Structure formats: C-alpha cells, structure tokens
Image 1 (cartoon, rainbow, N blue to C red):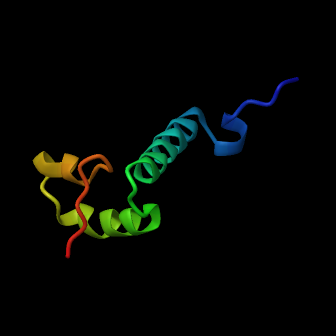
Image 2: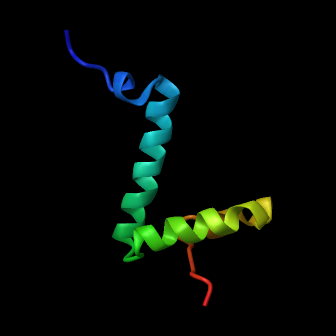
Length: 66
C-alpha cells in the first residue's frame, strides 16, 4: 500500500500548510533572502502588521527592517 503524505503531516490540512510553508521558504532562497532571518522577522512583525499590507511580508516583496 502506498504511503500518503497526510500520514506524516497529521491531516490533509497539515499537508497543505506544509506545502505553503515550503513554498515560501524556497521563494526566499530564490530571491536571495536569508530564509531563517525572513521567517524570524515575519513572525515577530505579523501580529502588529496591518492586514491590508500583509503582502509586504511575502518573500517577493520583503524588505527587512534596518
């Protein structure tokens, strides 16, 4: 019997969330952004970030705070 990815992620929703996370991390690498620094910064900023400006935090628009 073939193994299904959801067995390793807990659910189909877990698989989708993992795919999104992996896509974002790989996009940071493609754009030349330090993925660990990006993720740390985004997690620190997201709670106070305006929802209509959330696209600023995506890897293809990301600019680190100086």
